[in-house]
Image (cartoon, rainbow, N blue to C red; front, side, top):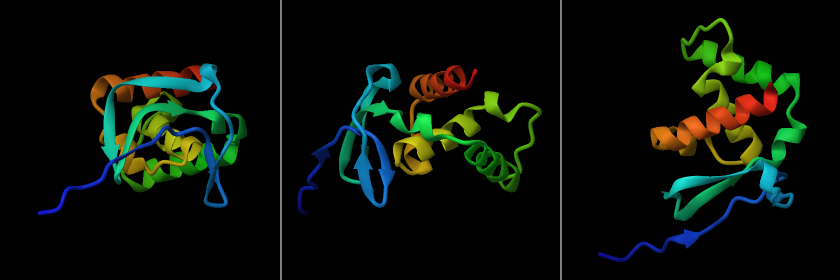
Length: 118
């Protein structure tokens, strides 16, 4: 059996037209408690530079995704699922990456997104 090649990659911005754009901003960066392997990449930090571009439309989309999945809450902006959807939008990583996070890292993402909004 062949050995899988794993490329270390740091997410440095938000995807636009298939390319990552933006530069890391320490105020919009979180270090994960461990390195995650995802689609032949290693990810140890997340840069939420795309948060500046979030609009109400992104929030409505996240809420609609939650409703379509059967999730109903009074204040969706405070939920983990909502934060992970927004995180996927703002980093260019798919939601599947965020769903594999360990609880400590998932809650750090939720806290970061919630604090940014409030």
